[in-house]
Length: 464
Image 1: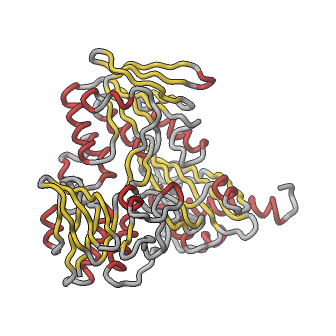
Image 2 (image 1 turned 180 degrees about the vertical axis):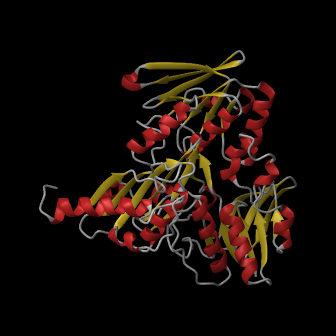
Image 3 (image 1 turned 30 degrees about the vertical axis):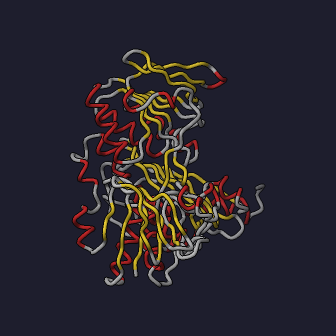
């Protein structure tokens, strides 16, 4: 059997590895558009900051490691067409175009950066100091730009996960950062009240933050870049900087599959069943190019590296005859911003209400460990639950770097994944020692607050 995989990132490599792991007689060919298979795109901000000292350290596995498993890598090779009925893939490399036959195909083409409607964006590029950041090639272009021009001022369009990580990374290199976000608060994946804590952390480290502000034009002026925008109440804004980074999100890269008539779903991502099968015969797909099966929302789109790894593994197993199923996501995410960590899992209040759940949300600020032990810090925790059934629906946490916020969101994610009630979280047998926690962990104190509020509001007849 010959399995062909398109894509050398999380989903594609996971599929190829799983197939080889299960059946060493399966021939696996991986078609990679660039020369960097299995590199951690999530680690790019830490390479730019200098914390990751060499770009090769971003490799999950080296090329030699991958080829040692028995897979064949076709690097710098672009997949251009799927002949579904003929079970073959057209590719283009330095020698021209050719066809690769397959018995099964897994597509993991990922996502591409969104290009916002900014006047002049198409007229400037990396040579001018304007960058979109997504691939290793983009990373090298940004690094070269920084080394060549030694910028003193940078402007980042977007304050989502990558934008915030890059604000920290550029600041670490001594570059003054201005961050522009069109929404009312930074990190819009959490509620504005928690996003405001991240906002304050950015300001504390010297970042100029402009929310409710849209960049409208970028022009090159001699050695500098002139950026224009509109702020609150449509007030004009302008900045002169040396470097511009545009990171406003991604969209699924579905061109290859859609051209072959694959069915699409939410966000125009390719529709797949829980076994990662597409509507095309003998074609599976996984990662940021496909829909996400969300355990609370059903079919959605949520591009995440953790999801891509799991989906790719399922696709690789099933492409060679297996019967695995992707168990679904609850959207657990975390980001470090200087000395703060923000995390979320499941649904926020308005997400839950929009999906038809009778949502109730509370906020608590328990300490991360016993206060009598030095260094205790509060964690801001929002709990969202179903007011009718008591089921846990979601959580958001913001805490200091030492508060184990990332691991605490995992506790709530696990509870959510297994459809526990908010009250049942208090029954979990969690670890305790005064330097690290409390007899009731911070997440349990937060869920107990929710239960108390729920009882007083609904059980005892108080106004809702």
